[in-house]
Length: 325
Length: 255
Image (cartoon, rainbow over all chains, first blue to last red):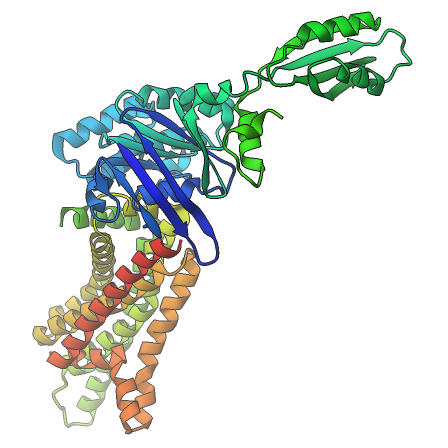
């Protein structure tokens, strides 16, 4: 559905996107993940024909963005980072306007305005001025605007930024609900979002793609590593956190121990294992054998966050191995 | 065409949904009404004077009222136009809605024409207020209506030209105030260029003088349609809209 090959976008002094390539199949939800300034928005803007790439090509549904921009634009629904809203319009008036821009008319237009208002849960404010709406509503009006012409491809630039947790959940549900009919590219720097919504992830850093994989596979890379939260109360109160920490570090298979919290004479550590080792049993034994109280021992899910950080923070971006040392 | 109409509708609604249109109309009605009053008063006074002298001369309403009023309206237009055009693109750029327009399946030219027409129609509506004043002349006298029509055609041409320039300047900034000030500066410059040329007869003075919009409007106010002036205004409109299109396009390469 979407094909990007060697896409590069240079600005006057910087290269925002550097030779990236990826493909998205029909009906997929793909997360476009990267720190701020990584080139997510620029890539999306190239795909939506907002700006032409400096070199390389991008095509949507078989139409090249440079050669057939009109065909591409007809097939894309785009929600920029700030929803493109006119505060002095009513919601229904706005959706009608956008619908017309996208080529709808007559009964179909009226029908679609009704449908997307229902779908994005903005029907109850359809006669309100957009300027008077809360941020969550505005975001949903923005989404409604993007899907009004039932496009094949939806491009959403940070659709949940700036919303409160409840609104974020609502928006995510909405996006997931759209998945069947549309191919969706969604950019974000929030990791759980990708884990929750997307099937595939494209991780981008400094304008380069550093990893492309399914969410499942990416988290699997970390399978070999176990992270455990350990809360210990050294019974002989004199013992400080440092001593406990060095004891835990000696447990075989432990790669590192981090002190998270100290309170009421108890210390909370997070221990990570070496690749392929299980450490929970050994940790427990070691604590008990030292004569301390073990308050808690619980596996901490190593999330995409770690993958993400390790992939994006190393200068020599190394797609695979850089995770588990 | 349909898309141009969509944009046009949106712009017109937006003008009349906000206080801009009404504010400009009130401002214009006040100033143009004042000038109308002044010229009518002068006309009446002169008329009485010439009768008291015992040698009543025929006085031409068109010459004494219509022409100077139209000339004044043309100058007031210079002040109004920046306020009409400043928001056209600057506002869309600031609020990010330009992304919606540019990524919709419509051509840049359709966006530009829709906006420019909307500005022109608002301008025409504002000018219409002064026509109410001038219409009163027909209740008490018999002015020639043809110079009046030509005068308004000239005002629309001059307005269209400055609006096109204002539209272009509006694409260059995210800030409405800057866009407005810039347009005002250019409009003012195009007005006073006329003064420069009146002091010199050299070639450069003629060239500079030729660029003065007010000098090109003057024949219209007398009821004269000179193709040279029409060509000037129409080509300025094209230039303004062409620059707007270029600027909108460059927005994509740079932004």
